[in-house]
Image 1 (cartoon, rainbow, N blue to C red):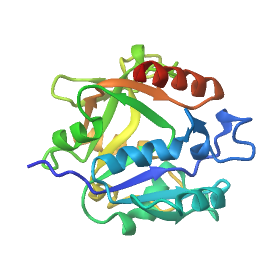
Image 2 (cartoon, rainbow, N blue to C red):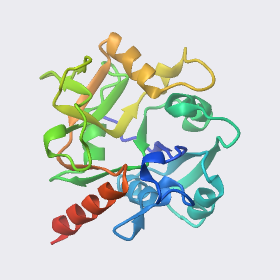
Image 3 (cartoon, rainbow, N blue to C red):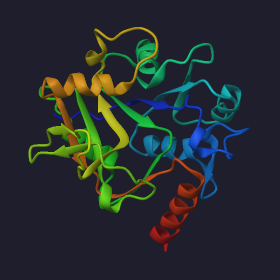
Length: 240
């Protein structure tokens, strides 16, 4: 039986360098898109699918984020404070593990936005996650139809959902959409300090326990000021 995670982690500790000048005096998760901060877009999505506890890590201009989430009633936001050390995407999760518990949890980038298709992509991830076969299930967006993404993709995806990582100079059809379900057990032998979550993805991939689910709808990578405008336009069109 699929289990809907009730806990999540949002990565919100980045410096937002590519988002300058918008991030000169504001952390990237608080940059508004269509009148609402990026972080609130993600928190609202999680609330909609019954997530009650969200860990948000902070490093750059942390007090702004701490102050912003203090007024939220739902979900319960717990801060993982990284202002004293840069831990990277992987190290940040390791620090937060005591808060996340021992069950699979949602993991999201604070700059990911999407428009759902017929069904909620967070619920689709939960329905597809099989802990007997998977350590990590990534939401995968088609590169050709995504907004704000110009790279060569991250993975090719087999019919059964298993992923093949892009080799150098290769172009593949899917990009990681910044949304996943992760089993905390995969971090059992992780290093302390700074490291990238990519190491954890690669470790799961080597054991054939890294899977992907194709996003139903439209993904928007809001990483630059221009991408903010493109995302706002897409949101306006979807609401029309």
